Image (cartoon, rainbow, N blue to C red; front, top):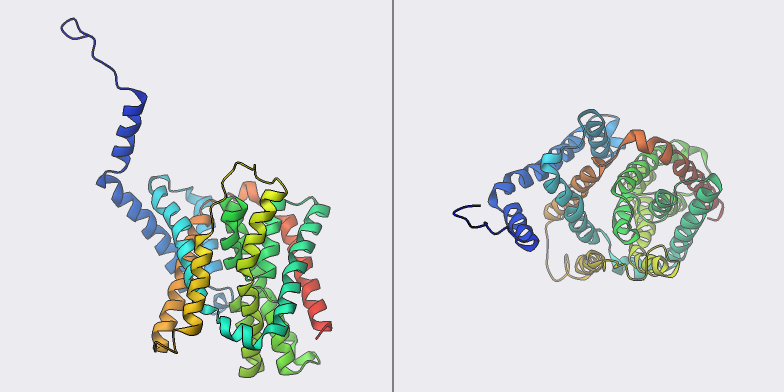
Length: 353
């Protein structure tokens, strides 16, 4: 009370506007930038570690996720810079998926890989159905198991990252799934290299085997390269068909989420514009770059590295959400389901060549 008058209090609306204004002040920008830089730093460490003998088989993405998870367990989540970390996890993820489209040559898939595309469809359907069925039998977490099934069937961590927003998956599930798929895929690719001299497969058939059954493009390239350039080319062709199928699969998953009532009918599923961007960039890479527009290989290589780095930064942001004390029991059974699926996929693919 002042001079006999009561000072009017601010309304809730006014207080809300004030908080939004204060939140958007330039003073918050340094913390936002610090969060982005933090994910950049751990991603950089992941790339640096990938140059160390032995760790290069695992790859920068898995290395960075492990570093982020370890940091979270020791130091906790860096709350002050959360806004920048979340920006990296959400936005850089979408940018990376869009740029990932440049790695898909649709023209090659359609002109030379239609027969392989049928096998690719079978791989995806088999991986998702068997992983989720095993998860049900093992009483495993369904959401994480579904992500692992999709990662196994399509294209590893990139597929998990792409479908997670559509499935409303938890960020820690996305990070754990991406880490598991990267590590297991690396083990499988090394196993393929070791047994290649012992199996009765011609080089091209071996290439098809790797492209149909291994988890990520990097795993396929690693396993197929020792069999020669022709084997590597057909392996990547088989793998690119699975990458292409990520787009129709995403829309099928959106329909399935509605149909099965896993989300309420009034819940809004964000339209995956980044997948449209992915498809657009693949068209650019297939019909424009190198044809209408000449692009030096060094620039294309730099673009590929940028894509991987952005995806790694996004995974760092997700990895920081992982609490191992809560997740260790949750991840074991989905991992078992995924391992069984991966082994059976390799065996069945081998005997159908």
